[in-house]
Length: 213
Image (cartoon, rainbow, N blue to C red):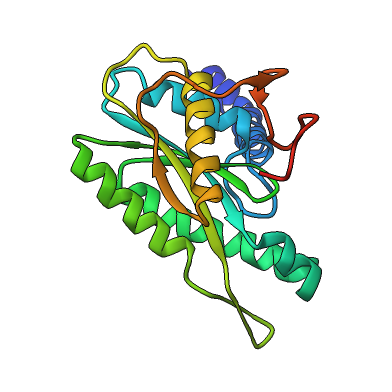
């Protein structure tokens, strides 16, 4: 009996050490999954979680691009731009849980979200709330920064749809909203309608005809 107790006592520090190591490893992995500026999940992690969320449908996919962000950077400096991004992320992190959703940063001033949606009316309400939240002024260094947003959304009523297709459709809707001066636009149907270049909407950033949208 004493030998068993002695062995357990000797193993306890080792077990505690492994537990602490595992906890630290988990935290490092979680940090790597998040954008350091906004603390939102990155694109890869968002894709994993959003794909699971879309399994049974009854959801909406959103793509969000800030308006006048370059102007803020050019006028007030990149620190002001960073403040806008952090504030936008906080607003998204407040809005998403209310709507049983997840949100991530795709890079630059582009964000994506997926929420649960039970009806068209609920989706319109979610879009109105999101647009209102994202267009409130951001206060930085004594300045009130006017921020706009172009939000594209697509309503997914059934499961089995590819997230990449839904994001492309939401991107098309976002571009329509931007062309109309900002606000939100709901895609009519799930099938993308614009021509693509290397898998991206023609005219989008990163394509030959890209114009920053």
